[in-house]
Length: 103
Image (cartoon, rainbow, N blue to C red; front, side):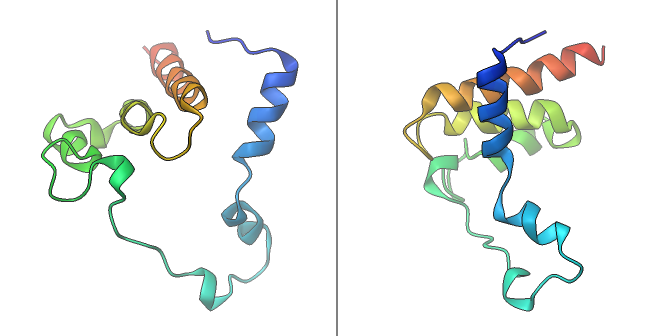
């Protein structure tokens, strides 16, 4: 199992809270917050790229496995969405360990 220090775990949990999480806690979701950006960002490879995350997940049938799909997502975007490559790789490890634990 992946073990982080208490400080690292608290930092991870605080960063996992997104504006979407706050919206879900509200009784009603405002209309302006219901719109989702469906563009495929460059940090995932872009829609026309054979190795774009959605394309790879579907070709390898990992789209049916939440944990492995997230592993691939975080590996593919490591250091591209943000400059914090280590954080993305740690997130990939967390999902990989959860998948291993289910075996």
